[in-house]
Amino acid sequence: MDDVAGMGFALAEAQASYDAGGVPVGAALVGHDGSVVGVGHNRRVQDANPLSHGETQCMMNVGRRASYADLVMYTTLAPCMMCAGTIVQFGIPRVVVGEAANFPGELDFLRARGVNVVVLDHKPCIELMAKFIAEKPELWNEDIGVAPDA
Amino acid sequence: MDDVAGMGFALAEAQASYDAGGVPVGAALVGHDGSVVGVGHNRRVQDANPLSHGETQCMMNVGRRASYADLVMYTTLAPCMMCAGTIVQFGIPRVVVGEAANFPGELDFLRARGVNVVVLDHKPCIELMAKFIAEKPELWNEDIGVAPDA
Image (cartoon, rainbow over all chains, first blue to last red; front, side):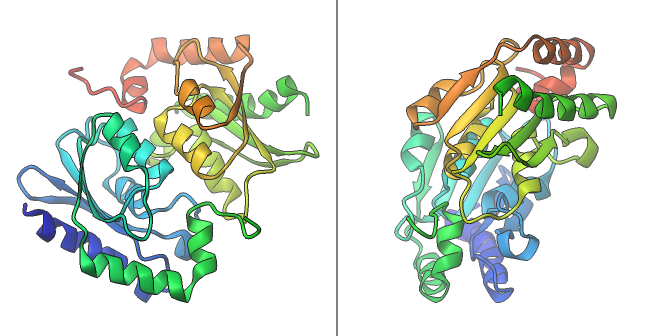
């Protein structure tokens, strides 16, 4: 699948979360044949689950598999340390990132652990996240693990 | 709280998972005043959720907090990369590990990120995990991200 087309599935998830009042980060796991194996979006607000980021929710929706080595992760935003650790733990070999402008994420860590990382610098991803951060900075800080007094 | 006493809560969770046919890893998050803020155990088998390790399930059970910097994580087994990333992401400053004999985990990563890590080498934790690995190697391999043909 073309990377911009793959990112479309992740971005649609991010938009769905934004429309529901949640954090607009979305992800999709896509197989080598272009099939979308699963999608997900951040549900911290919707489910009151701090571990529900776009990437982890997508993994939970895909569920148990003997291996994840045949999948590509598309995510609208650079993965945080939890999500980067999850990607490495489950052996996902390639991650396509919509943008790292609003949040740098752990791209160096992923690369150091052998993950093939591509950053699209995708304008629709940047704009949606920037709009959310400006509108709800307290939710955003909670999501990236920044305490209110930090 | 004394570290061996704190580990007792995590070990009770691990035993509960073993008794239910699941992976026997348990965790507890304890405050500075000794109060147990939350507990959890691996529910990969019980919930078919690959991201439900002892540490992550404990975090999910604790839920949203402005900060996790006042908590100590007790876990029966050395954290995998997903769980270590989660600990760093949420700023948990201290992790007490029951054992790293059956699985080395990512203790060096945690320490490099400034987490205070203590390994108890706790015999009941070692024995419960060793019994499970001998009984159900296929579940164990899935849990640590080892593919069947690896």
